[in-house]
Image (cartoon, rainbow over all chains, first blue to last red; front, side, top):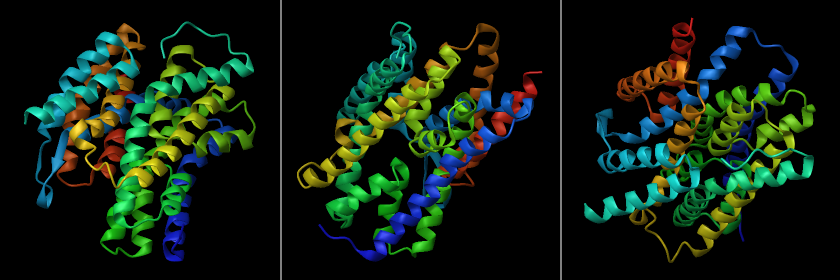
Length: 108
Length: 238
């Protein structure tokens, strides 16, 4: 069990800059009544952020940022969406999604 | 997540939160484990792997930290990169916070401290379904996720020498599959009249992401694309 003090401060610093954006909205929203338009805007954030997270994973950035499809992910994406729509189950989607990915990696 | 409605009386709510976390555990455990392996390969000690999991508690950022350590990146650049990578949590916290304003400041800090992509996804789906988030429920969800993450990271660091090929088993896809499921669950809770608009926004999101990736890193892309498409949503929903 060792710890490098240089690394320790990097971890603490990284922890701090991760923590602040996580907690500030909770403190802020608690004390200030947000305007209606912001509240409405926030209702769109979940779908937007989740789809952004999914879609960024379907692409790959090559050298000089040339954007191409990450084909194994695209192939796994299709059955995973179908499973999600069909089962509406988080667990089954994750489990079968992983299985589809494993099968795809096995084939290619 | 779609079990029968539960009457949330304190203790039950906590337990229900723990239960609602279980479907996400495959994602946490495999990614956390993978991080432990990568961390060890990078040269982190087991204690350092644990500290990273405890203090940073964010999948992508932890991997990037390792990648930057290997290339001897200056400390300030590492911290700044982690900041940018995790800035999306600000938007997630902002959309969860209005549901828990009735709880004390200290508890709110607690909710925020343990917010991740996954707990956000589960919590926001719950909020959409029951129009309410219970503090004890959120604690149950958060604490389960946090503890599992730390255990998985440390286990990966410990056993990492034996198992290296997480990709071969498709486990790297667990996280994406989870985002897909959470997205579909969100949409299935949306009423019919709005669904059409949401689907349009998602198509716009696809194009936006593609365009932005030509200019920005994936993390900046997620931020800008979300800001842009959510604003477009407000404008379309007149």
